[in-house]
Image (tube, rainbow, N blue to C red; front, side):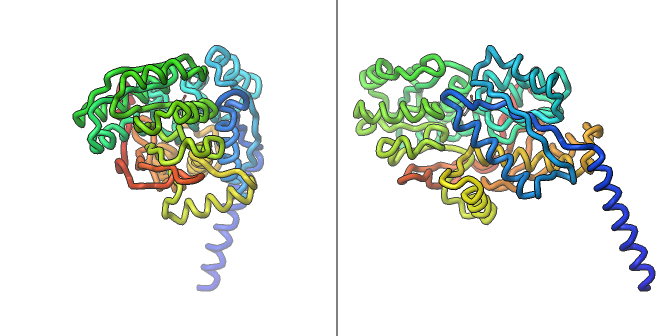
Length: 389
Ligand code: BEZ
């Protein structure tokens, strides 16, 4: 019997060493970050990279036995430069995996380039509905959200508060327009009416004329999408105009995520909906936050860091399924699509279109936290309109 155990154990050791040797012989997995490192979304790009690297570091710097080598491009949140920036990573650096980006317009160009070159893409923020809608593909994955998801969840909440009329205000590009459309769908389904949509070009922050218009329109509630540096300025200007005392301001949670230090008093009490929150009572989130605080002292983890962290987890699931062999692309992608991600936000799976099916939280700003109030919608799936997979 002892001999049999010894033989079985030996076989297992040999198989593991063969797999490891094979993984090492393949060299590092080349990961290309296409993210904004300058402009209004710069902090978001850095948080995504931090989150991704934290997970890889927690695995000893290796995924499925393979080292990870990083390549970086600053996309400046500029859609006009996106095809060229994507090709720097795809053609010049010949990365195996693309990770990015934040801005929906840039992400759509990145998705097109990824599909044309058959490079696996992990979308770590940009919510463009099209990415997991008409542009969906077997090699396209998102670990963040669709613009529709958090905004749609806010509609019934505003209606339940008794608000009948809403004005929306946002940047005029896919993220803002789709968030507003999602809110309208949820609000009007629940009996409310959006009476006016206001917008300004991305990334402008000249909000004053639009705030004057809101004051004149006197809606019951304002719904907004802004993020990063623009969100800081919008929340400050809304309060400086005195509107926070008369017309409640609701938004997708990007309005107050990663921004509270700069927004200070002007953000207190704001209600937003998002797939992450402070004060989630789950051990995974507690461990993530402790590890993030240790790795990046003085930087609070936010939704962007979580999305980056989960992208690395998703990649790990795919690589493990093929023992690090990237030539088995179809098998790797199949395993990624079937994975359950043990996320700090709460475990989630991917829809057939490759978008997280996830809880959306109602949060309220309290000090420097977006404290969870309740789950607004459990396991919300994007409708994936136009995806034919
Ligand atoms: C977007 O462009 O999709 C986006 C940017 C920042 C935060 C959320 C979404």
